[in-house]
Amino acid sequence: MRFAFLVTSALLVLTACDDEIRLPVQEVSDAVSPDYCGMNELMESSCLGCHGPGGSEPDLTDLAELIDVESSVAGELYVVPGDASASYLYAKCAGTQSQGAPMPLGGSISDENVDAIAAWIDAGATTECEGR
Ligand code: HEC
Image: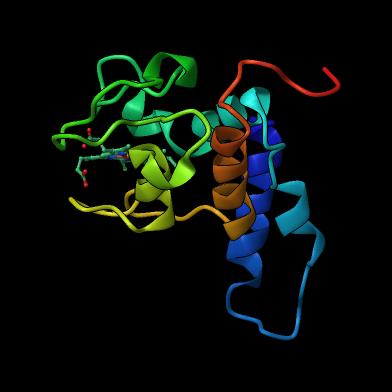
């Protein structure tokens, strides 16, 4: 997964200056499934560089640990099962946060993956993974 991510990143860099060349598959291949396994893949590739153990709060190694946990912003919980719009983790990724910068800081994740976070939370933020 990390290798695929690096290849995708390299392709993006290579094609960034040339509008003629399009690789429509890359967005799709970079999209994670909207379940717990997909969330962990996404956190690993886009977030753990800063939010690993001992890094910036919160530690995003296991999103199940963030359910109903209060963020640094009073009254804002990271993950509210069944309600992405009330979940600060989602707000930070969607760019609708009340404090600080949108995540990932200095980078970006695809709209599909932002939607996958919402779908996982709205479906109850379970620790199940479809088909795996
Ligand atoms: C380059 C480092 C970096 C990356 C990559 C990064 N973050 Fe952050 N994150 C920070 C810093 C620094 C803060 C604190 C400042 C702020 O809130 O803007 C923060 C704050 C947050 C907060 C709010 C914490 C709180 O309690 O206020 C959340 C939620 C969060 N990040 C989620 C993510 C997610 C999800 C990703 C991956 C999609 C991600 N971050 C990627 C550095 C990073």
